[in-house]
Length: 249
Image (cartoon, rainbow, N blue to C red; front, side, top):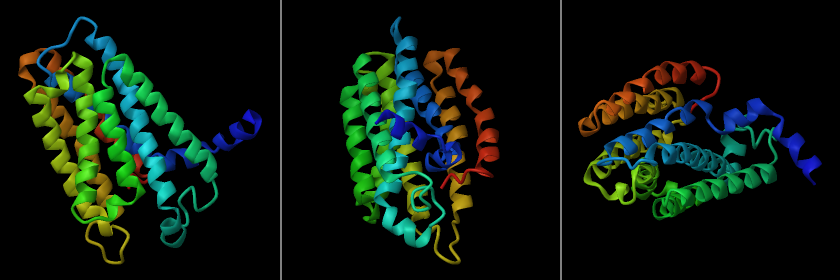
């Protein structure tokens, strides 16, 4: 069984397209911003952050896979070159990988007492992907909630109750509103003559990186650690470079 499964993972280029590789670069900034916006970090907080980073990345990656799985019929009609309709990746394999990633993310979250954040985040991902994304207001709101949850995951890593601190909540609201707006603009990105094309939506998603850096620097109560947010800025150039090969939207 394992011998049958592993060859299906070998098409690396297709997997990177399925996961929207450039957008994976926008995830660490959520977690770092949440971590720094928390009032303080415990002695083990930084070690917990290194568990939160893969947890957030795995949740995002699982969400991308599930998005394409549930959009298979639509992509088969409108985007036949996507990895799943092009049969570059088997749907069964994609589903298995998505479930494994969700399980690992929840497992890691349990180690830093973040399940109260991770479980609602997983539910938001599932509700969005199964079809609620097509509801006018609820869809963008759910996507915004997913991004906000990722930031709160980083806050939970700082210390118990960090996600409930007002500064991370404010940062989560900023990200949620931005992503909800971008999601709304992306609703008709593939329509002929669309003002916001997939390329422009990709650029807007990339602008999350300087926004995250700003949120990090705004955590002046954590000086000089808040200046770590500036280390996110080089990711913007890398995002744009990767976007020329792997469409981020």
